[in-house]
Length: 129
Image 1 (cartoon, rainbow, N blue to C red):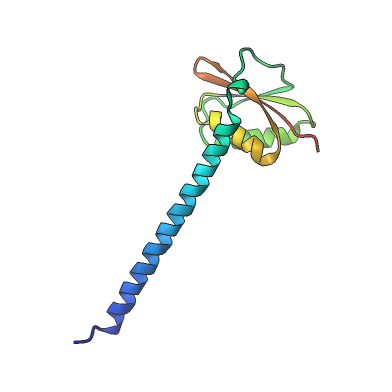
Image 2 (image 1 turned 180 degrees about the vertical axis):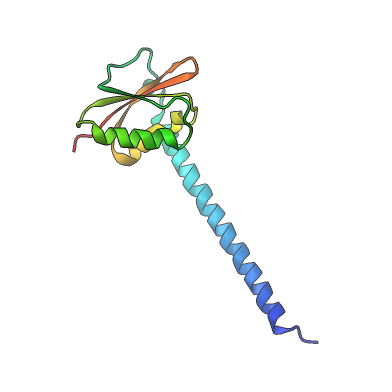
């Protein structure tokens, strides 16, 4: 006996949706892995500071969590003159990988980080346009 037409369509749709979901998750994993590896390459031992750097401005993002510290950094960096140094204070551990990756993406110079108890002090220089 032959299967009804709607049942065949339903099976094909299920297979197509399953393949689409698999592709979407694979692409997401690849992008996440690429961003993480980029961030790891930018956070090297020479970027770990032993004392604070002189900064033109300080951005306090303590109590704010991903992605808000990066959004606030992007807003503040637009207000600064080229070649200015911004100090970002954060208690979000993700900032240690997020900020170097963001700097690499937008062409700013990541100067390093200083861990001060539960607070990260990260430094970046605005790119010269």
